[in-house]
Amino acid sequence: MRDAIGIMPFRTVFAALLSVCFSPLAAAEQVSVSTGVYTEAEAQRGQAAYASRCATCHGRALVSTNDAPSLVGEPFAIGWKGKTLAERFTIIKESMPPNNPGDMTDPFVIDVLAFILKSNGYASGTNPLPEDPADLEKFIIPK
Image (tube, rainbow, N blue to C red; front, side, top):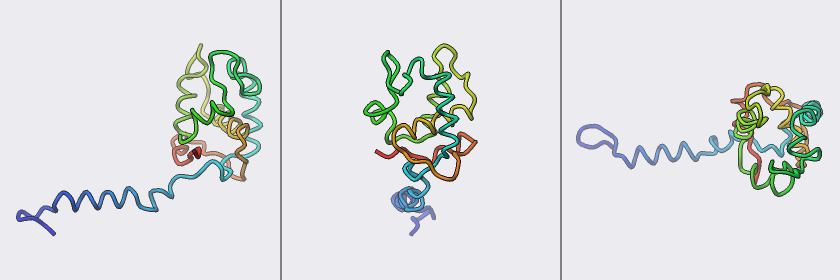
């Protein structure tokens, strides 16, 4: 339907946009990290990376004894669940370590993410996390 000047009415356009935004295809683009989105090798590298640069503040067992947040259990659930790996990557990449933010390489941060996922009970899989941080947007940590 078009109005007198040949333009589709707003509500028709709005309804079409809603159907696209909330279609099964749009929802299918996100992948739960519970499906095994990292490899065991990434988690092992991440454990070594974490021990070298993160454990001082966040604790060797990912349980902090200072102002840094713990990265397992309830603190993990509060800060991470419902977020994408891209969101968590960006926070780590841009703010860590506190004395030299942005000093860690992308592969380092991706491996640390894999270790944090493993430490919170998410199983590994056969495919590694993507090398391009922008591709981490499709991976979501379930609530």
